[in-house]
Image (tube, rainbow, N blue to C red; front, side, top):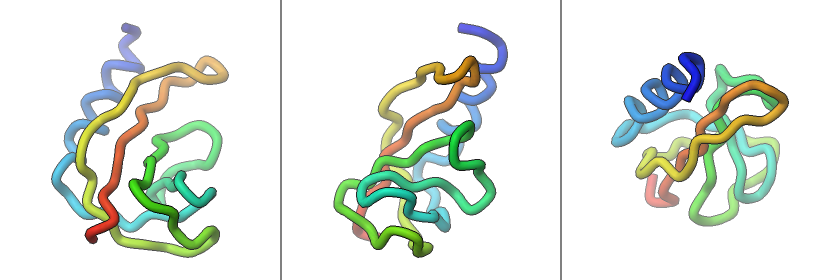
Length: 82
């Protein structure tokens, strides 16, 4: 794991249990209001959200760490109960 991926993993893991304001990019995919759409953290939603709108959700569990376009990003799951 590269240093960049390790830092991204630690940052995403620190969000578990917190509520975040998310922008829904696709029905089951969102990102925090501070994240860029193609390079930063993605949030998988347990149920579809309204595309183009902000929602508040609790971050539950990490799903995967991967690399895309040579930039590491971390996928986390948000509950719909928020």
